[in-house]
Image (tube, rainbow, N blue to C red):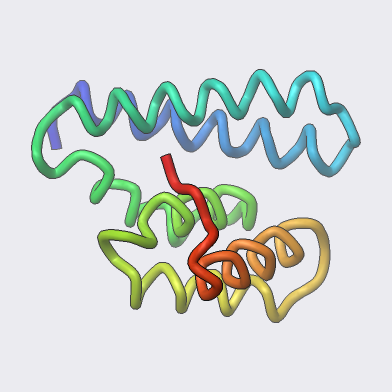
Length: 116
């Protein structure tokens, strides 16, 4: 993986981690700021090369469930089996990450999920 791509993946993961913490703490301003950073990193990753967001697969093993939900969500179109399995596993748990995973899966199956 190129150093640019590695750096962008780190930015994405850090922003997803910040978003999860802000969400857990009810800090919508910080969550919104982190969301913008997630999307910016996602687009930057797509611009690096053809592999782009496929690199987010490495986040499936991240210890923070919020990071896993974000990565799985952004990989649903290109790695659906792996992403659905990750989201299903998280949704079986408890907490806000589990709720987010459940909502993502529900919207995905209904065909209404908008993925940037």
